[in-house]
Image (cartoon, rainbow, N blue to C red; front, side, top):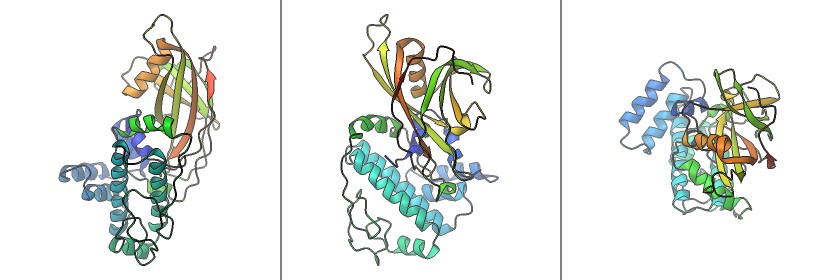
Length: 324
C-alpha cells in the first residue's frame, strides 16, 4: 500500500494534537495563533475556508491560489475518509484515490498556470482541468489517471486486515499536508528489530522500547513516521477472559526516537505516564496480557507516501532488554 492519510494516524494512534503541526515546515512566528484563529472563524472544521487558511498558516510561502488548492484537496481527503468510514469506499479504492490526488497535487503546486486552470475549470474535481479531461463527469470518489479517466481498482489481500486498522485511525482524524515532502522519494522499507523493557533516558522514564531500522533519505523538513502493527499472541493463562490474539496499531514520529543512532530507532512506551488509548492498549498487552507478538512496521512521510510493510517478526520481549 503506497498511500493513505497517515496525517490522521498521528492523532488516532498516539501523538498529541500539537504534534500534527510537526508535519508542516517549522512554523513561522505567529503561525499557531493564525491556525487557531482560522479554526474559530470556521463554522465547521470541514469547511473549505478552514482548510485553505490552515494551509496558508502552516506554509506562508504558498501563494493564495496554491493555498486554495491545497486546502481544497485536504478537504476532499476528509470527505473520502468519511466515505470510507461509512462503507461507501472499499479500502482498495480509498487507498487508490488518495494516491491519485496526492500525486497530482505534488505536480500542480509547482505550476501556477495549471493551479489556476484546475481551480477554475475542473467540473468533476479530479484535479485534471476540463480542457485536458478526456473523461469528464467522473463520479465522486473515483481515482483517475493523468487524462482524467477512471482507474481500475483491484482488491488486495491486505483489504480485510487493513479495514479495521484504517477505521480506528480515521475515527479521530484531521488532515494537513506537508509541502516540504513534495517530490520526496518513497520512504525506505524499515524492519522490526526487537522490543522489550528498558530505560528511556531522553524522557527520564522506564518502559517498553521498540527498536526498528531507522529510515533516512527524506528531504529537509519532511518528517518520517513509523506505523507499527502488532498481533499479540500467547495470552496470559492467568487471565482467561483474554482473546487468543489481539491486533493493535500505533504510530510514532521520528522526532520521538530515543537515540541518535544512524541505523537504529528506538520508540518509547513509558510505564506510568498517561498515554493515548492506542498506546495504552499496546503497553497493557506487553505488560500483563500476552507473552509474544508478531509485529511489522512501515514508514510514512508527511505527504502520505508509505513504504511497503515489512514482513511480520514474531518475538517475545528481549531477554536483555532494549535500551533507549
